[in-house]
Image 1 (cartoon, rainbow, N blue to C red):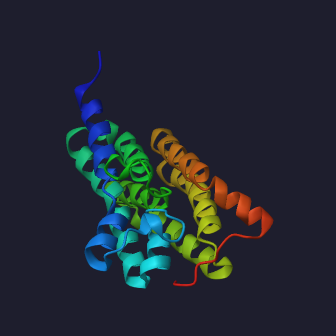
Image 2: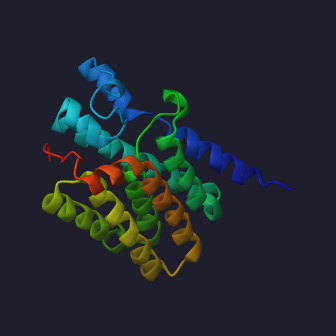
Image 3: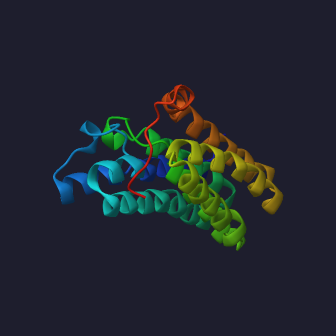
Length: 202
């Protein structure tokens, strides 16, 4: 028999993750649909590239909080499904029902997942600050948001497992990491042939 709490967690995670903050911020404050600019991606990197640093930071923060809020809220009524809800928040962010299923690349969702778990387990430094610092260090050194995201997310799998010793939580983050790599498949091609765009607004 299907657990109603599981169904609700999945639906809530997906719908909340589907809120396209890049689209909302672009249209409301800049009168711009960023789906028609830059890479067309509804994420913080493209928002920053098209609309400027303030927009890029705002979109990144709000997109991160989507997954965090989903995990923390679901944890209150169905803690066993909080991690799954976080995965569906990432799926919603990447394939949002509110934006014709064309969204971001799940990087902020991954950060939000780690932050949500970190808050619950009182391990914010280990699970969030360290991976975030790794991302920004790689970004500073390479200027490639795509490469920094994929490397930091993959390394975070091992950090999450050794810190939490929770295979289920870690497995769900592995699913998000797979989603990140899949969403970056074109970036990987450009990285390999030397045509990937660097981030200049950070």
